Amino acid sequence: MADGLNRFLGDTPGRTIVKLIVVSLIVGFVMSIFGLDPMDLLEGIRFFIIDLWYTGFDALGRVGQYLLIGATIVIPAFILLRLFASRS
Image (cartoon, rainbow, N blue to C red; front, side):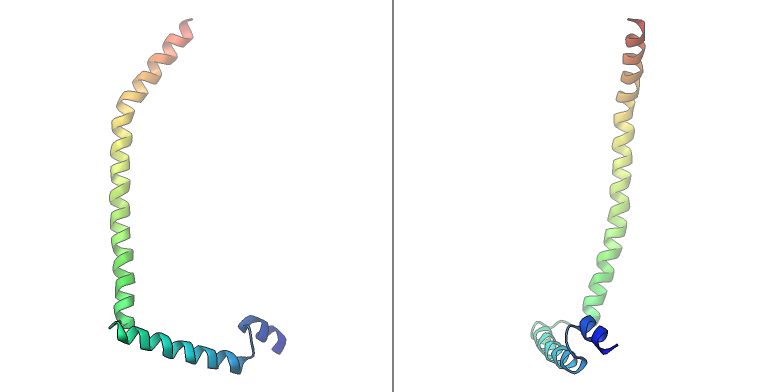
């Protein structure tokens, strides 16, 4: 059991906790220097996903328009080519 836990954590639980505390202090210090707040980061991620959602559907709408415009030329040309190919 302990061997599996050590393998999962990469080290003993005590050493892993100490490493996480040290890294958390360093990251917290750097974030406070740059004026970053965890809630600001979460809001930024949320707004990024919302913008991506709306932009993605807008892009799909443009693709649909391009498909219809292209189909007005390609489909009749395809039908004409198939008709002329079947006569020869």
